[in-house]
Amino acid sequence: RQLLTESLVLAIGGGATGLLLAVWTTRILERVMPSARTTFPIAMDLSVDWRVIAFAMLLSFATTLVCGLVPAWRGSQISGVAGFKGEIGAIRNRRPLALVAQVVLSFVLLVIAGSVIETLRWLQVTDPGFAVGGRLYAYIFFPSAPTPEAGRELYARTLGRLRAVPGVLSASQTSALPLMPSGTDCASLSGGPQLRVSTSAIDLGYFRTMGIGMIAGRDFTAGDLPRESSTIIITESFAKRLWPDRSPIGESVQIGCQTQQASMVIGVVRDSAVRAVGEPPQPRLYQPFEREYSGGISAVLLETGTDAASMVPAVRQTLLAMGQDIRVYAVQPLSTYIDQSFTSVRWMATVLSGFGLLALVLAAIGLYGVIAYRVSLRTQEIGVRMALGAGRAAIFRDILRHGLTIAVAGVIIGEILAIPASRALASMQAGIRPIAPSTHVMAAVIWVAVALAACYVPASRAARVDPMEALRHE
Image (cartoon, rainbow, N blue to C red):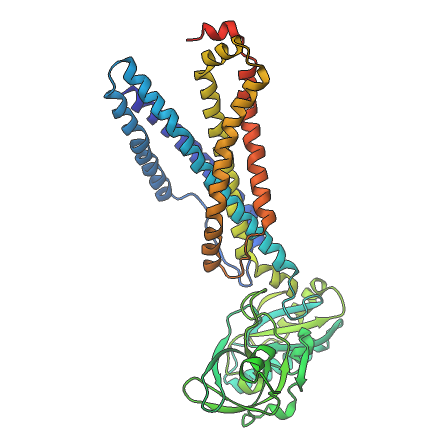
C-alpha cells in the first residue's frame, strides 16, 4: 500500500503539472500561429478540451498502475533483509538500461530535428527556378461572370488596369501559382508510353514576369490564343524525357490520358518548382490562359520596380475598383508566399526540437538522480577506498565514468537508429535532406556535455566524502 500510494501521489502531481504546462503551451502556440499563416487563412481552436484532459488523466492512471502496481506487488512478496537487498540490486541493475533508452530517444530526436533545421535552411537559399524579389501576387475571382468568355474579358481588363499602376513593370496571370495544386495530364509521342505531367494555363508575358528563362523556341503570341490553336511550351525536363537526343521545337506531342489531341511544341523554358522548392525537376507544360480558361480563380502576378510589400495597398485598391463583385484573396509579395510554403517543415523543426530538448532535460535529470543515488549507496564503499589510499580525483573519475558510459552507450545506439528514423520521416515529408555528419557530431557533443554537467555534482560530492564519516554511514 505504501509503494502504491507513493506512485499515486507522483502521478497526481505529475498530471497536475502537465495540465498546467498544457495550458501555457497552448497560449504560446496561439502567439506563434501568425508565423504559420498560409495563402488562404485558416482558423484553429487551441483551447484545452475536457475530453483531452480526461484522456490524459486516464493515461496517467494507467501509467500509475503499470509502473507502480507491479513494483508494489513485487515488493510485497519480498521476505527478509536479504530478499530486500536482492530486489534493490536488481532495480539498480535495470535503471541504467532505462536511462540508456532515454538517451537514445533524446539523441534520435535531436539528430532528426537538426536534419529538419538544415533542410529548412537549405530550402530558404535554394533557387525555385523563378524570380522572387520584386514580385507580387493576388488571387482573384469574378463570380458574376456568366460565361468563361466573359470571365476572360474581365481578367484581361484587370491586367490592363494593373499595368497602369505606378511602379508595376509587367503583369500576367496563371491558373495556379507554383507550389500550389495544379492540373495534370498525360503526354506521349505517337505510339509511345504516356508521361504524367503537370499543366498550367498562363497569360502572355508570364515567363518575363516570373523571370523564367527561355531555353529554346519562342513565347506565346496573339497567334496562339484562338481556340483552334494547339501550341504548347514545355519545361527542360519534359523535353529531355521525350526528346533526349534532339530539339523538341516544332515536334508534335499527344496531350491527353483518354482522348488525345496533337499539340506542337513552340518553346522550352527552364525548370522551376512545381510542388515544392528543392524537388527534382518535374515535367510541365504551359498553355495560353485565354485559350484554356474555363472559369474559377486566377492568380495575378506583378513585377514591380520597388519593394513589393509597399505596392500591396495600391494593387488591392485597383483590384477592388474593378467592381463586378470581384473577390480578392491574399495580396502579398511572392517572397511571403514562398516562405509560407516552408510552414510544414518549419513546424516540424519546431516540434522535433521541442520534444528533443524536453527528452534531453528529462534524461539529464534521470541521469543525475541515478548517479546521485548510486553515490549515496556507495558512500561506505567510497570511504573504505579513500581510507585505503584512493585519491579524491580517482573517486571523481570513477563516478563521472559511470555516467558517461551510460550517455555514450545511448549515443552509439542512437547513431544506429537515427538514419532509418530520418528515412522514415523523409518518406512522409518530401524534401527532407539526409543527416549531415556535422549534425551527428553536434548532437553527440551536446549529450556528452549534458552528461558531464549532470554527473559533475554527484561526482564532486563523492570526492569530498570524509572517510571517517563514510565508514559510520548506514
